[in-house]
Image (cartoon, rainbow, N blue to C red):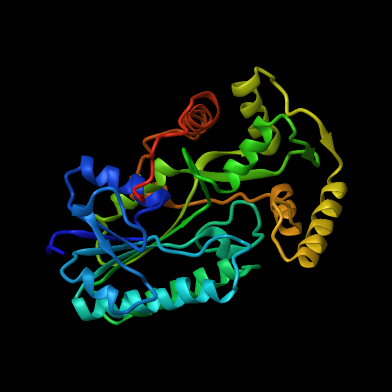
Length: 330
């Protein structure tokens, strides 16, 4: 790598692709460092955070943005969370020390807070409930130890996004939108629970913005406001797709919990994950509403939450994009 390039570790995926597009527009040199090959070989370096030898390829980088993670809530074996999220962080820090790289931007997650009280901000108490949240929190501690070795010269930015959505992503928000689009969606509960979300373009924009931060520790939750409750979210989707200005059919919340626990039992019997689980039902019906001090940085999101949702719905369900490539990965 050249001395002025940015190493985007895990950059071939959802967020990394958007970030690379933004850096291209800003004429900021970078390399996508990933186990997945990308479309443009000139901007690609093979890198596996579990392989210390491959991390030698970031030599000369002026900054590291680490997006690599195991993030599914049903990943198997469970050790994958530790190998990538924790050991990967140790390996990245060792590489930064060895190569004299003094700026690291790490994407953590609001999952470290667990089922937190509404409007939990960056001072919230870690209370993770799964291996993903636990290993993200452990990784944060590793990066902060790296910073403490030379706080006058090193810069550490920890970004804790809430659930990220956008075009071509196949995460939790897409699964919800797809269910609604299928016209087989059933709302469980009263629908007053609020959900903090983040549009991918805005997350990428903040990652780019944070490259200008000065030495020291910078921790921010990332949320696109205003938060929507489930009634409003489902209604907006149904209105866009079907012209229906209501959330549709619903059942009592306790039935959803029973269905989720039954799915867990079936999963254990067949030894194969199902699209429904107890934890997913609980997350759907719970309030996951967070606050952030990000406004203090002067950052302004380029896309409103409502426009981001509209762009995603249009791309996924109102246009034919079946043959369109949107990620860097081949």
